[in-house]
Amino acid sequence: MRQSLPPSKLSLPQQAFDWYDEYAHGLIDRRTFMSRLSSLTALGFTLPALISALLPDYAKAEQVSFNDPSIVARYAKFESPQGHGECQGYLVEPKALEEKAPTVLVVHENRGLNPYIMDVARRLAKQGVIAFAPDALFPIGGYPGNDDEGRAMQKSMDNTKLEEDFIAAALFIRSHPQGNGKLGAIGFCYGGYIVNLLAASIPNAIDAAVPYYGTPANDTLQGQVKGPLLLHFAGLDERVNATWPAYETRLKANQASYQAYSYAGVNHGFHNDSTSRYAPDEAELSWSRSLTFLRRHLL
Image 1 (cartoon, helix red, strand yellow):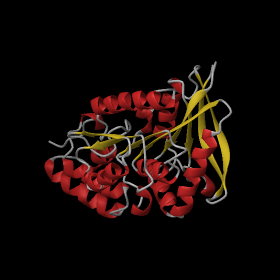
Image 2 (image 1 turned 90 degrees about the vertical axis):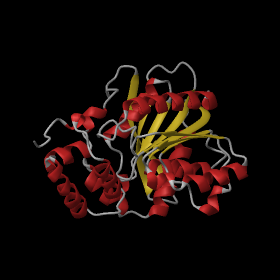
Image 3 (image 1 turned 90 degrees about the horizontal axis):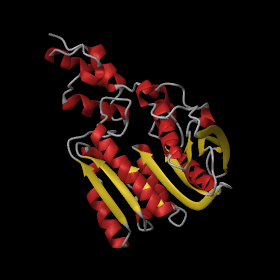
Image 4 (image 1 turned 45 degrees about the vertical axis):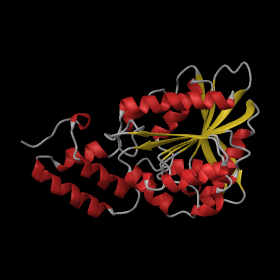
């Protein structure tokens, strides 16, 4: 009997998650991805059910409404002279700021500012943080509304300029007039890499760095990392996890302040509640740890 259950009820083979990870990170093309998924129909799955389970459904990801009365959300532009020039991000502030608040940069995956990342920014604002989520795709039209196009757009951009854009975004939000002068950064996947990059390239400006399943900055920069960092890894994420031993060795050599957690049995992207990779218990635990860490270093 073919499995045509709702995506949240499907028990997918690990192969499917691994193939999606390869596809999402440009290691295989869409045709190869679909061909591999088709091979699972012999196990009783339907191709539409597999695709629906693996690809994001952003309606699931909204935990905090954009018109929540306790926050104020808007778009704000900033300049990136070494990057793409004029850039834009999603700025979310607590509505009633009685005193200055910490600022946190929220960095998206490799597909632009999608609804999940915007919701993460709103979640932080609900905790009393001024959150800013740049859209790397703004200089070429902005997030297009679906991840496949967004991924292709971001891949077409100059990576060195993209990195400069995020550095500029970090310095922009750090100077927010209602900020307390402390800056945190949290990012997911490509965003995790960017957070590691920020911790290495502007270590004196980053007071707390939280990369989720992100690879480290290049070797020439790693010697500048001093932390504090809180790193989250997915137990089944062999691609990213393979980079951790050497990075940890460098952090120890730097005498950097860091904590690292690996969550057994979950996939890359386990915090993202818009796909079946989402692991609710591990996502909640990691988020609780992240909030505690940010409060400790930013307040």
